[in-house]
Image (cartoon, rainbow, N blue to C red; front, side, top):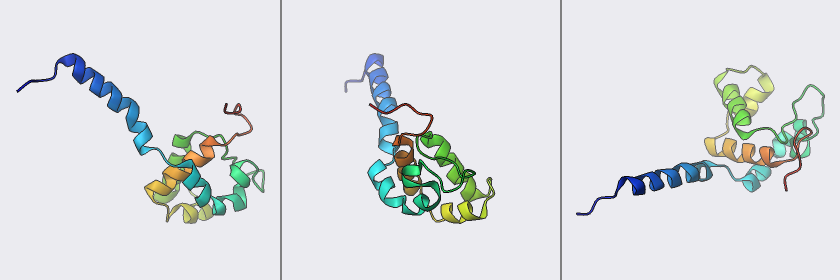
Length: 113
């Protein structure tokens, strides 16, 4: 039986490391379809909240948004409205929503080219 040499193991490790985030990433198109409830307070695409105290979601980092939603689910963040909104979300829902909002142009982010 022939074994792989260390160089081949290294190349396989690099390919898997680079490809792993793409496999676990959410689907922005699915996130857009799931974002109707979010739009009621955060505005279309998360860019223009109805109240200045509500955060702008557009252009925010996906990992930050995911952490916030998980914190609402666990009680780490306290807000009765957001806790109720986040409670039924699955991991896939969170991945899709965060992919969508992070792909939008926010007030502080440069346009995506």
